[in-house]
Image (cartoon, rainbow, N blue to C red):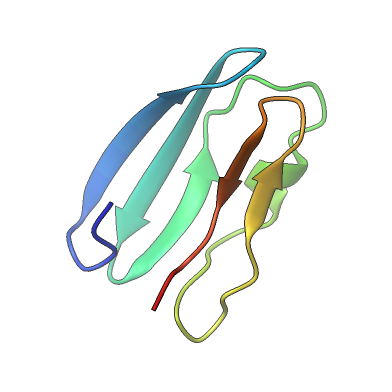
Length: 66
């Protein structure tokens, strides 16, 4: 995924779909099929805020690689 190109992505996780929104050089999890939604509540990540978004039920990790 290109963090510099606005886009939406859909991944298949272990318990359902995992959607990623990339906008203005940032990324976030949105509309995720998982019971606790911690990944969604993590918010936006970017080069300035590189904390990875992890969805354990789906087995997916979203992170910014420089």
